Length: 248
Image (cartoon, rainbow, N blue to C red; front, side, top):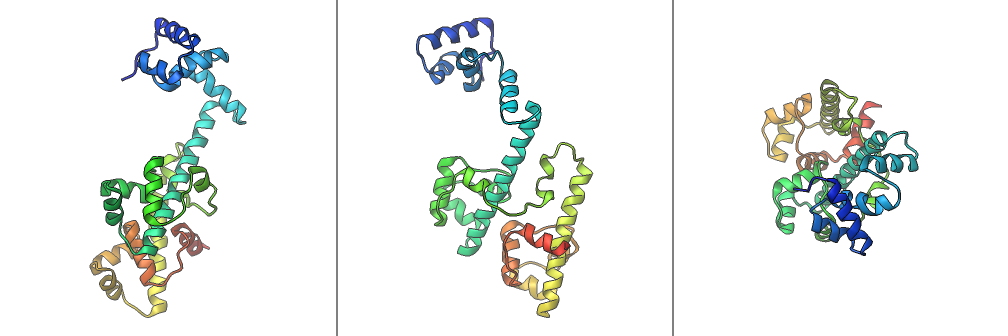
């Protein structure tokens, strides 16, 4: 729990700063957050009186009209990075024919943590990221490297972070996403002259589960989805590519 910023804290922070204490040391001494301490010291020296004032300056410097607009841009960028990172991990697990449970054991983390990463809802800290790339046998990539990866990101994957989109709209997008995947399965089964029962047997689920996938009522988990694509011999760039091609 951080300390409330009082006038006394402001003056104490400035006094410590003028005595050449580092911002991190001052934050520890005063039990304040690093950002708050920066505003009270280096920020004050540069003419900023509050965090909001600094954020407004930063937004204008980056070419945005307001700090809110800039924060929304950062949130969207962060979401895109998470989705791209999840694709890197899912694709590599597919190539190695390994499960998320295997990866969790290798990294000594929980299955739920790996599930968050491969579902695009989280991204590990740098140390764990480096270990993950090493275990998967792929070159390490920084967040900036990941962000530079080109490729379409389906709008439904970003819907959760769009404040102007209501829940019904998000649900409609997700439903369209599920139906698109179901159409892919149906079309491919027809071309291969195979049945839903055959597919169910190949991936180890019930016929009714395949029916739910095809009807768009539900979507298989990421690893099983990749397994379906492999069995049906569908070229996998990203799932978003498949949905886009289905809607053309």
